Image (cartoon, one colour):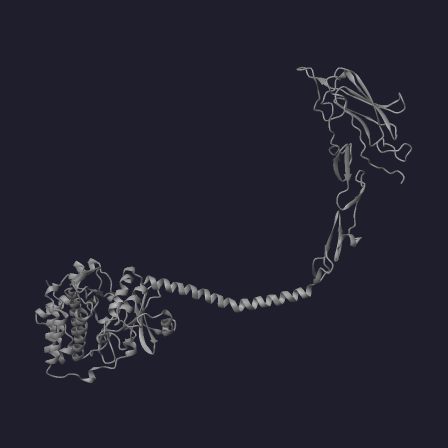
Length: 618
């Protein structure tokens, strides 16, 4: 191969003696370098790629050809340290005679003799240095990867290239796509500088570096399509089911939380302990939703500021369901005992509490359905003709019986606390039913009353109860007396004001004392039965005395009204007095929380009560 260049690792290093005996003596040493070259062979040492170099202090190197013929030489000198007189190496990175020298090799030969002369006999252990050939690209050119070796350096082409990296443009790119057997590309091979790219044929996918690694895309599309279809179908079918399950689980936990919050466990315990409490007292929310078509607006039959009343069908029985809007925790805390007490009431003139639902934030109450509206709507019906006196007297007697039963005959005395005409329901036979026990309180048997927050309706509220907060059975007596006045006059107690500014109670008492009842009594009943009207008016005055101790008990009132009915000279049960009112319209307001807006049961301000009783006779 003409003009070929071969690199061999055959450098020669020599370190002069550095022991104490050699110091201060001039030494001359000869050595022969032959490397791996054969005398007379095809290769000689290349002049342009090799140099004669000496590194150290005060040393001279001579390269000899024939005996006593110097081919090249250089000398390396150092300065002396003034502190201790020793020779030191400098920090120069060059090789120009100070600490390092180099010379050209002028003749190409296969072997050389060189002579090392130590000048002044001083070299020392620091008379040698290491040359990093890879960091001298101008002196040691490399177009690829340079790595230092013992006595020289190696230069290789970069990966993906082949050739001679020691000469410019000596490395050529390898075409890896030309011999596919060497680079294992079973798809489309694309050669790029220093490397190659391999991918599957169009319409296929997979691993192109293995035989048979690429598969048809149509199979993938089919598989993906089938998988996507199955996933979509499962999602479509399963999403509503999962969503429904999650909602049902949340709803169940919410119901359980409200059930415990509303003391449902305590009510269950009371039901199990008392056999006279109906087993159906606790009703689920699902049953009530089914009974009212999920509390549809078409099932609403009444309501007010505190809630809504719905009509529903539960176990083939028409019921009324009261759904409150306002949450008062203290009322919820007393709710269980109240329900337990009311569930034991079995009186023909008290609306029967059928059960309750504790799975809502505010418990729902379920009552028997009374279809004929409230007493207030029958009294306030438009026109001059209303309920007959016989009906009014009988209704008053039935209400007194119910209250007397609550006060004394029930297992635990109960004070209604909100007796008014809008809380008295009438059935198809105009039989009275006392309702709305939302404000009622039960009183321990060994006590005559309880001290509680004032609650009632303007016009019906007992003044002594308002001022003292002491609730007794005489508080219900006062409210019943106001109800009697309403039966006698058909006036609204919460709205009435006389010309002098008197309320209904005080004005009625003044007219009774002045024998001028005709000025306020309903003309219809004065014509029907004037004498009994006067007797009932006197009873009314006793019921509305300011001092509660002066009022009769409900049992005494019941007996008085019963005697009036028995001693009645003429039977006035005239069926014509029972008018055919629009019962659908009247029933739409039964069991309402407010009845009439201004009758709202609530705690009153002292200013309102002072206005109410400003002209009350004392």
